[in-house]
Image (cartoon, rainbow over all chains, first blue to last red; front, side):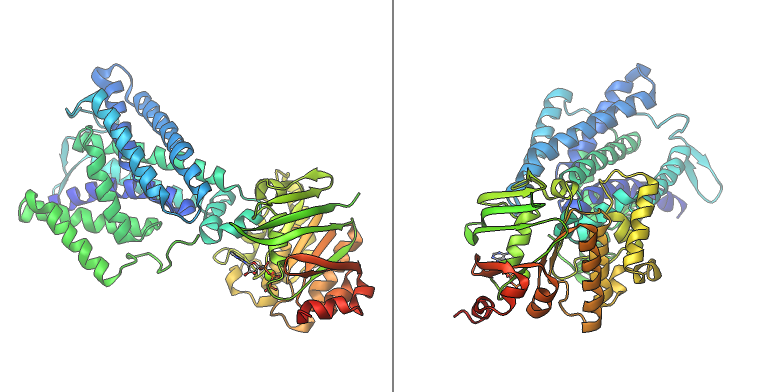
Amino acid sequence: MGEIFVEGLTMASIYAIVAVSFNIIYRPTNIFNFAQGDLLMVGALLAAVLARGNSMPWYGAAAIAIVAVMLLAILIDLVAVSPVIKRSPHGAGWIISTLAASIIIHEIADKLAGPDPRVLPAPPPLQTSLIDFGVFSASSFQIGLVCFTCALVAATELFYRTRPGRAVRAIAEDREASLLRGINPARVTLLSFAAGGAVAAIAGILAAPILFASTSLGGMLLLKGFLVVAVGGIGSNSGAIAAALIIGMVEAATARVLTPGLQEAVSFAVVLAILLVRPQGLFGTAMGRSV
Amino acid sequence: MPLLEIHDLSSGYGRVPVLDRVSLSVDTGRIVAVVGANGAGKSTLLKTISGLLKPSSGTIRLDGAPIGGIEPHMIVAMGLQHVAEGRRLFRSQTVAQNLDLALIGARLDRQEEHRRLADVHALFPILLEKAHLPAGALSGGQQQMLAIGQALMRSPKVLMLDEPSHGLAPIIVDEVFDVLVELRARGTAILLVEQLVERALDLADHAYVMVSGRITGNGPATSIRGSDLVRRAYTGG
Ligand SMILES: Nc1ncnc2c1ncn2[C@@H]1O[C@H](COP(=O)(O)OP(=O)(O)OP(=O)(O)O)[C@@H](O)[C@H]1O
Ligand SMILES: [Mg+2]
Protein backbone atom coordinates (compact mmCIF):
# COMPACT_ATOMS: atom_id res chain seq x y z
CA MET A 1 0.00 0.00 0.00
CA GLY A 2 2.69 2.45 1.09
CA GLU A 3 4.70 1.88 -2.09
CA ILE A 4 1.72 2.44 -4.32
CA PHE A 5 0.99 5.71 -2.56
CA VAL A 6 4.57 6.99 -2.74
CA GLU A 7 5.09 5.93 -6.36
CA GLY A 8 1.71 7.31 -7.38
CA LEU A 9 2.42 10.62 -5.68
CA THR A 10 5.84 10.86 -7.33
CA MET A 11 4.56 10.33 -10.84
CA ALA A 12 1.53 12.54 -10.11
CA SER A 13 3.93 15.38 -9.23
CA ILE A 14 5.81 15.08 -12.52
CA TYR A 15 2.58 14.83 -14.54
CA ALA A 16 1.17 17.83 -12.68
CA ILE A 17 4.24 19.96 -13.51
CA VAL A 18 3.95 18.97 -17.17
CA ALA A 19 0.25 19.87 -17.12
CA VAL A 20 0.96 23.25 -15.48
CA SER A 21 3.43 23.98 -18.26
CA PHE A 22 0.67 23.30 -20.82
CA ASN A 23 -1.84 25.42 -18.92
CA ILE A 24 0.49 28.42 -18.61
CA ILE A 25 0.59 28.62 -22.41
CA TYR A 26 -3.01 27.59 -22.96
CA ARG A 27 -4.71 30.16 -20.74
CA PRO A 28 -3.95 33.34 -22.69
CA THR A 29 -3.61 31.74 -26.15
CA ASN A 30 -6.04 28.80 -26.21
CA ILE A 31 -3.18 26.91 -27.81
CA PHE A 32 -2.06 23.45 -26.83
CA ASN A 33 1.65 23.45 -27.61
CA PHE A 34 2.51 20.06 -29.12
CA ALA A 35 6.23 20.85 -28.86
CA GLN A 36 5.97 20.98 -25.06
CA GLY A 37 7.21 17.39 -24.70
CA ASP A 38 10.28 18.19 -26.76
CA LEU A 39 11.04 21.28 -24.69
CA LEU A 40 10.93 19.08 -21.61
CA MET A 41 13.20 16.50 -23.27
CA VAL A 42 15.73 19.16 -24.31
CA GLY A 43 15.75 20.50 -20.73
CA ALA A 44 16.45 17.05 -19.28
CA LEU A 45 19.11 16.12 -21.86
CA LEU A 46 20.90 19.42 -21.69
CA ALA A 47 21.04 19.35 -17.89
CA ALA A 48 22.27 15.74 -17.98
CA VAL A 49 25.02 16.53 -20.51
CA LEU A 50 26.16 19.63 -18.65
CA ALA A 51 26.17 17.98 -15.23
CA ARG A 52 27.85 14.78 -16.46
CA GLY A 53 30.62 13.61 -14.17
CA ASN A 54 30.19 16.64 -11.97
CA SER A 55 31.76 18.82 -14.65
CA MET A 56 29.42 21.56 -13.54
CA PRO A 57 27.42 22.10 -10.34
CA TRP A 58 23.93 20.58 -10.62
CA TYR A 59 22.10 23.88 -10.15
CA GLY A 60 24.31 25.60 -12.72
CA ALA A 61 23.52 22.90 -15.28
CA ALA A 62 19.80 23.10 -14.46
CA ALA A 63 19.77 26.91 -14.73
CA ILE A 64 21.48 26.86 -18.14
CA ALA A 65 19.09 24.16 -19.38
CA ILE A 66 16.05 26.12 -18.17
CA VAL A 67 17.20 29.36 -19.81
CA ALA A 68 18.03 27.54 -23.05
CA VAL A 69 14.59 25.94 -23.16
CA MET A 70 12.95 29.30 -22.42
CA LEU A 71 14.72 30.75 -25.44
CA LEU A 72 13.68 27.77 -27.53
CA ALA A 73 10.06 28.26 -26.43
CA ILE A 74 10.25 31.95 -27.35
CA LEU A 75 11.59 30.92 -30.76
CA ILE A 76 8.65 28.55 -31.21
CA ASP A 77 6.27 31.41 -30.44
CA LEU A 78 7.99 33.84 -32.80
CA VAL A 79 8.35 31.38 -35.67
CA ALA A 80 5.52 28.88 -35.34
CA VAL A 81 2.77 30.46 -33.26
CA SER A 82 2.42 34.25 -33.38
CA PRO A 83 2.69 34.56 -37.18
CA VAL A 84 0.08 31.83 -37.53
CA ILE A 85 -2.36 33.45 -35.07
CA LYS A 86 -1.79 36.82 -36.67
CA ARG A 87 -2.84 35.52 -40.07
CA SER A 88 -5.93 33.76 -38.79
CA PRO A 89 -6.81 34.32 -35.12
CA HIS A 90 -9.61 31.76 -35.15
CA GLY A 91 -7.91 29.11 -37.24
CA ALA A 92 -6.27 25.89 -36.14
CA GLY A 93 -2.98 26.41 -38.00
CA TRP A 94 -1.15 26.27 -34.67
CA ILE A 95 -1.85 22.53 -34.47
CA ILE A 96 0.27 21.87 -37.55
CA SER A 97 2.91 24.49 -36.75
CA THR A 98 3.54 23.37 -33.14
CA LEU A 99 3.52 19.74 -34.31
CA ALA A 100 6.11 20.69 -36.93
CA ALA A 101 8.23 22.41 -34.25
CA SER A 102 7.96 19.25 -32.17
CA ILE A 103 9.19 17.02 -34.99
CA ILE A 104 12.07 19.34 -35.90
CA ILE A 105 13.33 19.62 -32.33
CA HIS A 106 12.99 15.88 -31.84
CA GLU A 107 14.95 15.00 -34.98
CA ILE A 108 17.75 17.43 -34.15
CA ALA A 109 17.99 16.12 -30.58
CA ASP A 110 18.06 12.56 -31.89
CA LYS A 111 20.96 13.39 -34.24
CA LEU A 112 22.91 15.24 -31.58
CA ALA A 113 22.29 13.11 -28.50
CA GLY A 114 21.54 9.64 -29.84
CA PRO A 115 18.95 7.32 -28.38
CA ASP A 116 20.83 6.26 -25.23
CA PRO A 117 19.34 7.33 -21.92
CA ARG A 118 21.54 9.55 -19.75
CA VAL A 119 21.71 9.84 -16.01
CA LEU A 120 20.88 13.05 -14.22
CA PRO A 121 21.17 12.85 -10.43
CA ALA A 122 18.59 14.35 -8.08
CA PRO A 123 19.16 17.99 -7.15
CA PRO A 124 21.63 17.99 -4.23
CA PRO A 125 21.37 17.52 -1.33
CA LEU A 126 18.36 15.32 -2.21
CA GLN A 127 18.92 11.62 -2.89
CA THR A 128 16.95 8.98 -4.74
CA SER A 129 17.79 6.29 -2.15
CA LEU A 130 14.80 5.22 -0.09
CA ILE A 131 14.46 6.10 3.57
CA ASP A 132 12.31 3.81 5.71
CA PHE A 133 9.56 5.71 7.55
CA GLY A 134 7.93 2.55 8.95
CA VAL A 135 4.51 2.60 7.21
CA PHE A 136 6.12 3.59 3.92
CA SER A 137 9.51 4.36 2.51
CA ALA A 138 10.33 7.30 0.27
CA SER A 139 13.43 9.07 -0.95
CA SER A 140 14.28 12.61 0.04
CA PHE A 141 13.97 13.46 -3.69
CA GLN A 142 10.39 12.17 -3.79
CA ILE A 143 9.45 14.26 -0.77
CA GLY A 144 11.15 17.31 -2.23
CA LEU A 145 9.42 16.76 -5.56
CA VAL A 146 5.96 16.71 -4.01
CA CYS A 147 6.70 19.87 -2.00
CA PHE A 148 8.10 21.63 -5.06
CA THR A 149 5.02 20.74 -7.12
CA CYS A 150 2.71 22.20 -4.47
CA ALA A 151 4.82 25.35 -4.29
CA LEU A 152 4.87 25.71 -8.08
CA VAL A 153 1.09 25.43 -8.38
CA ALA A 154 0.58 27.86 -5.49
CA ALA A 155 2.99 30.37 -7.02
CA THR A 156 1.28 30.08 -10.41
CA GLU A 157 -2.13 30.69 -8.88
CA LEU A 158 -0.81 33.68 -6.89
CA PHE A 159 0.60 35.12 -10.10
CA TYR A 160 -2.89 35.05 -11.64
CA ARG A 161 -3.97 37.52 -8.95
CA THR A 162 -1.36 40.12 -9.79
CA ARG A 163 -2.03 42.76 -12.46
CA PRO A 164 -0.05 40.98 -15.21
CA GLY A 165 -1.62 37.68 -14.17
CA ARG A 166 -5.08 39.20 -14.36
CA ALA A 167 -4.19 40.45 -17.84
CA VAL A 168 -3.64 36.82 -18.82
CA ARG A 169 -7.07 35.92 -17.44
CA ALA A 170 -8.60 38.93 -19.18
CA ILE A 171 -7.29 37.81 -22.57
CA ALA A 172 -8.70 34.35 -21.96
CA GLU A 173 -12.07 35.82 -21.02
CA ASP A 174 -12.50 38.47 -23.75
CA ARG A 175 -9.65 39.04 -26.16
CA GLU A 176 -11.16 42.04 -27.92
CA ALA A 177 -12.05 43.81 -24.67
CA SER A 178 -8.54 43.27 -23.36
CA LEU A 179 -7.08 44.77 -26.54
CA LEU A 180 -9.24 47.85 -25.97
CA ARG A 181 -7.97 48.15 -22.40
CA GLY A 182 -4.39 48.37 -23.64
CA ILE A 183 -3.19 44.82 -23.08
CA ASN A 184 -0.59 43.74 -25.65
CA PRO A 185 -1.51 40.15 -26.50
CA ALA A 186 1.71 39.46 -28.43
CA ARG A 187 3.70 40.29 -25.32
CA VAL A 188 1.51 38.15 -23.08
CA THR A 189 1.83 35.25 -25.53
CA LEU A 190 5.61 35.61 -25.66
CA LEU A 191 5.96 35.72 -21.88
CA SER A 192 3.61 32.75 -21.54
CA PHE A 193 5.74 30.71 -23.90
CA ALA A 194 8.86 31.71 -21.95
CA ALA A 195 7.27 30.74 -18.63
CA GLY A 196 5.65 27.59 -20.04
CA GLY A 197 9.02 26.61 -21.53
CA ALA A 198 10.79 27.14 -18.23
CA VAL A 199 8.28 24.97 -16.38
CA ALA A 200 8.56 22.28 -19.08
CA ALA A 201 12.34 22.25 -18.65
CA ILE A 202 11.87 21.91 -14.88
CA ALA A 203 9.49 19.00 -15.46
CA GLY A 204 12.11 17.27 -17.60
CA ILE A 205 14.93 17.95 -15.16
CA LEU A 206 12.90 16.58 -12.25
CA ALA A 207 11.66 13.57 -14.22
CA ALA A 208 15.17 12.58 -15.33
CA PRO A 209 16.43 11.25 -11.95
CA ILE A 210 13.54 8.74 -12.06
CA LEU A 211 12.91 8.13 -15.76
CA PHE A 212 16.37 8.98 -17.23
CA ALA A 213 17.02 11.71 -19.75
CA SER A 214 16.48 10.49 -23.30
CA THR A 215 14.85 11.61 -26.51
CA SER A 216 11.89 9.34 -25.79
CA LEU A 217 11.12 11.15 -22.50
CA GLY A 218 9.32 13.94 -24.39
CA GLY A 219 6.79 11.79 -26.20
CA MET A 220 5.93 9.81 -23.11
CA LEU A 221 5.38 12.84 -20.85
CA LEU A 222 3.58 14.79 -23.60
CA LEU A 223 1.03 12.01 -23.68
CA LYS A 224 0.69 11.90 -19.88
CA GLY A 225 0.49 15.67 -19.66
CA PHE A 226 -2.20 15.61 -22.32
CA LEU A 227 -4.22 13.01 -20.40
CA VAL A 228 -3.91 15.08 -17.23
CA VAL A 229 -5.13 18.33 -18.81
CA ALA A 230 -7.92 16.47 -20.61
CA VAL A 231 -9.13 14.89 -17.37
CA GLY A 232 -8.50 17.96 -15.20
CA GLY A 233 -10.04 20.42 -17.63
CA ILE A 234 -7.65 22.30 -19.87
CA GLY A 235 -6.37 25.52 -18.31
CA SER A 236 -7.25 24.51 -14.76
CA ASN A 237 -4.34 23.89 -12.39
CA SER A 238 -6.54 22.52 -9.61
CA GLY A 239 -7.94 20.12 -12.17
CA ALA A 240 -4.41 19.19 -13.19
CA ILE A 241 -3.52 18.27 -9.62
CA ALA A 242 -6.63 16.15 -9.16
CA ALA A 243 -6.17 14.43 -12.52
CA ALA A 244 -2.44 13.86 -12.00
CA LEU A 245 -3.20 12.22 -8.65
CA ILE A 246 -5.81 9.95 -10.22
CA ILE A 247 -3.60 8.91 -13.12
CA GLY A 248 -0.44 8.57 -11.00
CA MET A 249 -2.23 6.41 -8.43
CA VAL A 250 -4.00 4.24 -11.02
CA GLU A 251 -0.66 3.60 -12.74
CA ALA A 252 1.15 2.78 -9.53
CA ALA A 253 -1.64 0.48 -8.37
CA THR A 254 -1.80 -1.30 -11.73
CA ALA A 255 1.94 -1.82 -11.78
CA ARG A 256 1.97 -3.29 -8.26
CA VAL A 257 -1.27 -5.23 -8.21
CA LEU A 258 -1.46 -6.41 -11.84
CA THR A 259 1.60 -5.91 -14.00
CA PRO A 260 3.59 -2.86 -15.18
CA GLY A 261 2.74 -3.81 -18.77
CA LEU A 262 -0.91 -2.88 -18.21
CA GLN A 263 -0.25 0.61 -16.77
CA GLU A 264 -1.05 2.49 -19.93
CA ALA A 265 -4.11 0.43 -20.81
CA VAL A 266 -5.69 0.79 -17.38
CA SER A 267 -4.97 4.51 -17.05
CA PHE A 268 -6.41 5.16 -20.53
CA ALA A 269 -9.52 3.19 -19.57
CA VAL A 270 -9.94 5.31 -16.43
CA VAL A 271 -9.41 8.53 -18.42
CA LEU A 272 -11.98 7.43 -20.97
CA ALA A 273 -14.48 6.60 -18.26
CA ILE A 274 -14.05 10.03 -16.63
CA LEU A 275 -14.35 11.84 -19.94
CA LEU A 276 -17.53 9.95 -20.81
CA VAL A 277 -19.14 11.33 -17.68
CA ARG A 278 -17.53 14.80 -17.83
CA PRO A 279 -16.36 15.60 -21.38
CA GLN A 280 -15.06 19.01 -20.29
CA GLY A 281 -12.85 17.44 -17.60
CA LEU A 282 -13.17 17.52 -13.82
CA PHE A 283 -12.60 21.25 -13.33
CA GLY A 284 -13.24 22.41 -16.88
CA THR A 285 -15.99 24.75 -17.95
CA ALA A 286 -18.23 23.71 -20.77
CA MET A 287 -17.08 26.70 -22.83
CA GLY A 288 -15.12 26.03 -25.98
CA ARG A 289 -12.48 28.34 -27.34
CA SER A 290 -13.22 31.84 -26.15
CA VAL A 291 -11.72 33.66 -29.10
CA MET B 1 -6.28 71.17 -34.89
CA PRO B 2 -8.94 68.55 -34.00
CA LEU B 3 -7.93 65.88 -31.50
CA LEU B 4 -9.41 63.17 -33.69
CA GLU B 5 -9.41 63.66 -37.42
CA ILE B 6 -10.55 61.07 -39.93
CA HIS B 7 -10.24 61.50 -43.65
CA ASP B 8 -11.71 59.28 -46.38
CA LEU B 9 -11.62 56.23 -44.14
CA SER B 10 -12.71 52.90 -45.63
CA SER B 11 -12.71 49.56 -43.86
CA GLY B 12 -14.65 46.38 -43.37
CA TYR B 13 -14.47 42.75 -42.38
CA GLY B 14 -12.11 40.71 -44.51
CA ARG B 15 -13.15 41.41 -48.08
CA VAL B 16 -16.57 42.76 -47.08
CA PRO B 17 -16.42 46.57 -47.25
CA VAL B 18 -18.48 48.51 -44.71
CA LEU B 19 -17.14 52.04 -44.31
CA ASP B 20 -17.00 54.05 -47.49
CA ARG B 21 -14.71 57.11 -47.38
CA VAL B 22 -15.82 58.41 -44.02
CA SER B 23 -14.48 61.78 -42.88
CA LEU B 24 -15.14 63.36 -39.52
CA SER B 25 -13.38 65.22 -36.77
CA VAL B 26 -13.75 65.80 -33.04
CA ASP B 27 -12.30 68.84 -31.28
CA THR B 28 -11.15 69.05 -27.72
CA GLY B 29 -14.03 69.64 -25.31
CA ARG B 30 -16.66 68.59 -27.82
CA ILE B 31 -19.19 65.80 -27.95
CA VAL B 32 -19.74 64.54 -31.48
CA ALA B 33 -22.56 62.10 -32.15
CA VAL B 34 -22.77 59.57 -34.96
CA VAL B 35 -26.31 58.43 -35.64
CA GLY B 36 -27.68 55.95 -38.12
CA ALA B 37 -29.85 52.87 -38.45
CA ASN B 38 -28.86 49.35 -37.38
CA GLY B 39 -26.10 48.05 -39.58
CA ALA B 40 -25.09 51.49 -40.84
CA GLY B 41 -21.50 50.89 -39.78
CA LYS B 42 -21.24 52.96 -36.58
CA SER B 43 -19.57 50.23 -34.55
CA THR B 44 -17.32 49.40 -37.50
CA LEU B 45 -16.19 53.03 -37.51
CA LEU B 46 -15.24 52.94 -33.82
CA LYS B 47 -13.50 49.55 -34.19
CA THR B 48 -11.43 50.88 -37.06
CA ILE B 49 -10.41 53.97 -35.11
CA SER B 50 -9.38 51.95 -32.06
CA GLY B 51 -7.36 49.52 -34.18
CA LEU B 52 -9.51 46.39 -33.90
CA LEU B 53 -10.03 46.61 -37.66
CA LYS B 54 -7.42 47.72 -40.17
CA PRO B 55 -8.43 50.52 -42.52
CA SER B 56 -8.31 49.63 -46.21
CA SER B 57 -7.67 53.27 -47.07
CA GLY B 58 -7.83 56.76 -45.61
CA THR B 59 -6.19 58.36 -42.59
CA ILE B 60 -6.89 58.57 -38.88
CA ARG B 61 -5.04 61.15 -36.81
CA LEU B 62 -5.00 61.32 -33.04
CA ASP B 63 -3.71 64.68 -31.85
CA GLY B 64 -1.94 65.01 -35.17
CA ALA B 65 -0.28 61.58 -35.16
CA PRO B 66 -1.38 58.98 -37.72
CA ILE B 67 -2.82 55.89 -35.99
CA GLY B 68 -4.37 54.00 -38.91
CA GLY B 69 -3.41 50.33 -38.88
CA ILE B 70 -1.38 50.31 -35.66
CA GLU B 71 -2.02 47.88 -32.79
CA PRO B 72 -4.88 48.69 -30.39
CA HIS B 73 -2.62 48.77 -27.31
CA MET B 74 -0.43 51.39 -28.97
CA ILE B 75 -3.47 53.51 -29.74
CA VAL B 76 -4.54 53.19 -26.11
CA ALA B 77 -1.08 54.36 -25.04
CA MET B 78 -1.47 57.39 -27.30
CA GLY B 79 -4.60 58.49 -25.45
CA LEU B 80 -7.66 57.02 -27.13
CA GLN B 81 -10.25 54.84 -25.40
CA HIS B 82 -13.08 52.88 -26.96
CA VAL B 83 -15.92 51.69 -24.73
CA ALA B 84 -17.34 48.91 -26.88
CA GLU B 85 -21.01 48.07 -27.17
CA GLY B 86 -22.32 45.39 -24.85
CA ARG B 87 -20.40 46.28 -21.67
CA ARG B 88 -17.38 44.08 -22.27
CA LEU B 89 -16.00 43.64 -18.77
CA PHE B 90 -13.89 40.94 -17.16
CA ARG B 91 -16.74 39.36 -15.27
CA SER B 92 -14.76 37.02 -13.09
CA GLN B 93 -12.68 39.88 -11.72
CA THR B 94 -13.89 42.39 -9.14
CA VAL B 95 -14.86 45.97 -9.88
CA ALA B 96 -11.61 47.17 -8.29
CA GLN B 97 -9.58 44.66 -10.31
CA ASN B 98 -11.29 45.71 -13.55
CA LEU B 99 -10.34 49.32 -12.89
CA ASP B 100 -6.81 48.39 -11.87
CA LEU B 101 -6.32 46.23 -14.96
CA ALA B 102 -7.03 49.22 -17.19
CA LEU B 103 -3.74 50.72 -15.97
CA ILE B 104 -1.65 47.94 -17.45
CA GLY B 105 1.11 49.34 -19.60
CA ALA B 106 0.38 52.90 -18.46
CA ARG B 107 3.58 53.12 -16.40
CA LEU B 108 2.21 55.49 -13.78
CA ASP B 109 3.57 55.88 -10.28
CA ARG B 110 1.51 54.71 -7.31
CA GLN B 111 0.37 58.21 -6.44
CA GLU B 112 -0.97 58.90 -9.93
CA GLU B 113 -2.69 55.50 -9.99
CA HIS B 114 -4.49 56.37 -6.75
CA ARG B 115 -5.42 59.78 -8.09
CA ARG B 116 -6.98 58.25 -11.22
CA LEU B 117 -8.93 55.73 -9.16
CA ALA B 118 -10.19 58.44 -6.78
CA ASP B 119 -11.28 60.48 -9.78
CA VAL B 120 -13.26 57.59 -11.28
CA HIS B 121 -14.85 56.94 -7.87
CA ALA B 122 -15.81 60.62 -7.66
CA LEU B 123 -17.57 60.39 -11.05
CA PHE B 124 -19.18 57.00 -10.31
CA PRO B 125 -19.45 56.58 -6.50
CA ILE B 126 -21.20 53.23 -6.94
CA LEU B 127 -17.92 51.73 -8.21
CA LEU B 128 -16.35 52.40 -4.81
CA GLU B 129 -19.33 50.96 -2.99
CA LYS B 130 -19.23 47.78 -5.11
CA ALA B 131 -15.43 47.64 -5.38
CA HIS B 132 -15.14 44.07 -4.14
CA LEU B 133 -17.98 42.49 -6.09
CA PRO B 134 -17.25 40.58 -9.29
CA ALA B 135 -18.10 42.72 -12.32
CA GLY B 136 -20.53 40.02 -13.45
CA ALA B 137 -22.65 40.66 -10.34
CA LEU B 138 -23.37 44.31 -11.18
CA SER B 139 -26.60 45.64 -12.72
CA GLY B 140 -26.54 46.74 -16.35
CA GLY B 141 -26.16 50.41 -15.47
CA GLN B 142 -23.38 49.72 -13.00
CA GLN B 143 -21.60 47.61 -15.60
CA GLN B 144 -21.78 50.47 -18.08
CA MET B 145 -20.35 52.79 -15.46
CA LEU B 146 -17.55 50.34 -14.82
CA ALA B 147 -16.82 50.06 -18.54
CA ILE B 148 -16.59 53.86 -18.81
CA GLY B 149 -14.62 53.97 -15.55
CA GLN B 150 -12.07 51.57 -17.01
CA ALA B 151 -11.61 53.87 -19.98
CA LEU B 152 -11.25 56.91 -17.72
CA MET B 153 -8.46 55.26 -15.73
CA ARG B 154 -6.24 56.11 -18.71
CA SER B 155 -7.31 59.80 -18.77
CA PRO B 156 -7.97 59.61 -22.51
CA LYS B 157 -7.74 62.61 -24.81
CA VAL B 158 -10.38 60.99 -26.98
CA LEU B 159 -13.19 58.86 -25.57
CA MET B 160 -15.39 56.82 -27.91
CA LEU B 161 -18.59 55.25 -26.62
CA ASP B 162 -20.72 52.73 -28.50
CA GLU B 163 -24.35 52.83 -27.37
CA PRO B 164 -23.69 53.53 -23.68
CA SER B 165 -27.41 53.88 -23.00
CA HIS B 166 -28.32 50.47 -24.39
CA GLY B 167 -30.60 48.59 -22.03
CA LEU B 168 -30.39 51.19 -19.24
CA ALA B 169 -33.23 52.82 -17.30
CA PRO B 170 -33.73 56.52 -18.23
CA ILE B 171 -32.55 57.73 -14.84
CA ILE B 172 -29.29 55.79 -15.26
CA VAL B 173 -28.86 57.20 -18.76
CA ASP B 174 -29.10 60.68 -17.18
CA GLU B 175 -26.35 59.78 -14.76
CA VAL B 176 -24.06 58.47 -17.50
CA PHE B 177 -24.72 61.46 -19.77
CA ASP B 178 -24.01 63.86 -16.87
CA VAL B 179 -20.57 62.33 -16.63
CA LEU B 180 -20.03 62.88 -20.36
CA VAL B 181 -20.93 66.55 -19.87
CA GLU B 182 -18.40 66.77 -17.04
CA LEU B 183 -15.71 65.14 -19.21
CA ARG B 184 -16.45 67.55 -22.03
CA ALA B 185 -15.96 70.44 -19.62
CA ARG B 186 -12.55 69.01 -18.80
CA GLY B 187 -11.56 69.05 -22.44
CA THR B 188 -12.05 65.42 -23.45
CA ALA B 189 -13.01 64.90 -27.07
CA ILE B 190 -15.99 62.51 -27.11
CA LEU B 191 -17.26 60.49 -30.05
CA LEU B 192 -20.67 59.07 -29.18
CA VAL B 193 -22.63 56.43 -31.04
CA GLU B 194 -26.21 56.23 -29.78
CA GLN B 195 -29.52 54.55 -30.48
CA LEU B 196 -31.34 57.21 -28.49
CA VAL B 197 -31.02 59.71 -31.32
CA GLU B 198 -33.00 62.52 -29.68
CA ARG B 199 -31.05 62.32 -26.46
CA ALA B 200 -27.72 62.05 -28.25
CA LEU B 201 -28.48 65.13 -30.33
CA ASP B 202 -29.56 67.03 -27.20
CA LEU B 203 -26.22 66.25 -25.63
CA ALA B 204 -23.90 66.59 -28.63
CA ASP B 205 -22.34 69.71 -30.09
CA HIS B 206 -22.04 68.31 -33.55
CA ALA B 207 -23.48 65.28 -35.31
CA TYR B 208 -22.86 63.08 -38.31
CA VAL B 209 -25.51 60.97 -39.98
CA MET B 210 -24.42 57.62 -41.33
CA VAL B 211 -26.23 55.50 -43.90
CA SER B 212 -24.80 52.23 -45.28
CA GLY B 213 -21.23 53.04 -44.33
CA ARG B 214 -21.31 56.61 -45.65
CA ILE B 215 -21.67 59.97 -43.99
CA THR B 216 -24.74 61.53 -45.59
CA GLY B 217 -24.61 64.76 -43.69
CA ASN B 218 -23.29 66.59 -40.67
CA GLY B 219 -23.75 69.83 -38.82
CA PRO B 220 -24.40 71.35 -35.42
CA ALA B 221 -26.48 68.88 -33.42
CA THR B 222 -29.39 71.31 -33.07
CA SER B 223 -29.72 71.74 -36.81
CA ILE B 224 -29.32 68.02 -37.53
CA ARG B 225 -32.07 67.38 -35.04
CA GLY B 226 -34.84 68.98 -37.04
CA SER B 227 -33.52 68.02 -40.44
CA ASP B 228 -34.75 65.43 -42.88
CA LEU B 229 -31.38 63.69 -42.82
CA VAL B 230 -32.07 61.79 -39.64
CA ARG B 231 -35.53 60.71 -40.66
CA ARG B 232 -34.20 59.46 -43.98
CA ALA B 233 -31.33 57.66 -42.32
CA TYR B 234 -33.78 55.58 -40.32
CA THR B 235 -36.42 55.01 -42.96
CA GLY B 236 -33.99 54.38 -45.78
CA GLY B 237 -35.88 57.02 -47.85
N1 LIG C 1 -17.85 40.70 -37.37
C1 LIG C 1 -18.44 41.03 -38.56
N2 LIG C 1 -18.15 40.32 -39.68
C2 LIG C 1 -18.72 40.64 -40.87
N3 LIG C 1 -19.60 41.64 -41.03
C3 LIG C 1 -19.93 42.36 -39.95
C4 LIG C 1 -19.38 42.09 -38.66
N4 LIG C 1 -19.90 42.97 -37.77
C5 LIG C 1 -20.73 43.75 -38.48
N5 LIG C 1 -20.76 43.40 -39.78
C6 LIG C 1 -21.55 44.03 -40.85
O1 LIG C 1 -21.10 45.35 -41.01
C7 LIG C 1 -22.18 46.23 -41.21
C8 LIG C 1 -22.10 47.36 -40.20
O2 LIG C 1 -22.27 46.83 -38.88
P1 LIG C 1 -22.05 47.70 -37.59
O3 LIG C 1 -22.06 46.78 -36.43
O4 LIG C 1 -20.89 48.58 -37.76
O5 LIG C 1 -23.38 48.57 -37.60
P2 LIG C 1 -23.93 49.53 -36.48
O6 LIG C 1 -24.21 50.82 -37.17
O7 LIG C 1 -23.05 49.56 -35.31
O8 LIG C 1 -25.30 48.84 -36.12
P3 LIG C 1 -26.06 48.69 -34.70
O9 LIG C 1 -26.84 49.93 -34.52
O10 LIG C 1 -26.94 47.51 -34.93
O11 LIG C 1 -25.04 48.47 -33.64
C9 LIG C 1 -23.43 45.41 -41.12
O12 LIG C 1 -23.86 45.11 -42.43
C10 LIG C 1 -22.99 44.15 -40.43
O13 LIG C 1 -23.73 43.05 -40.90
MG1 LIG D 1 -23.20 48.91 -33.37
